[in-house]
Image (tube, helix red, strand yellow):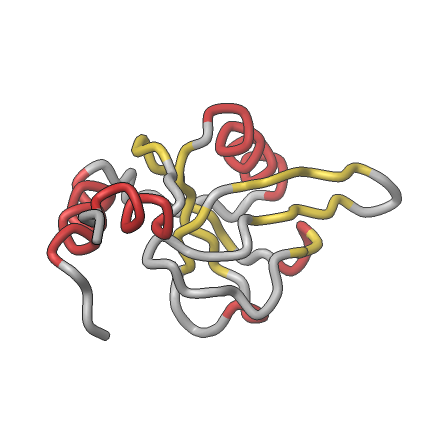
Length: 116
């Protein structure tokens, strides 16, 4: 994967703020996901439907009904569009909280672009 210098710096900053403890207990996961939504912080999500790697994104919404549905941003920290962003809490294997705010990678690119 090829990163721009800015994206690599952002990823490095997130990784430095990584709380290396992954949480797999549903109640604790829900708490971490709710914190991501409330504070706009990044969160690492491990779920088979997202692939074999940890997806670093943020929570857009949490819907509590018969099941708990977590709606993630539709892109990850590098700007990669997720194939799905609506996950039941039961399909999430583990989560990892980050202290870093999650920003739209597209807006960072546009705001740093020079006018033509």
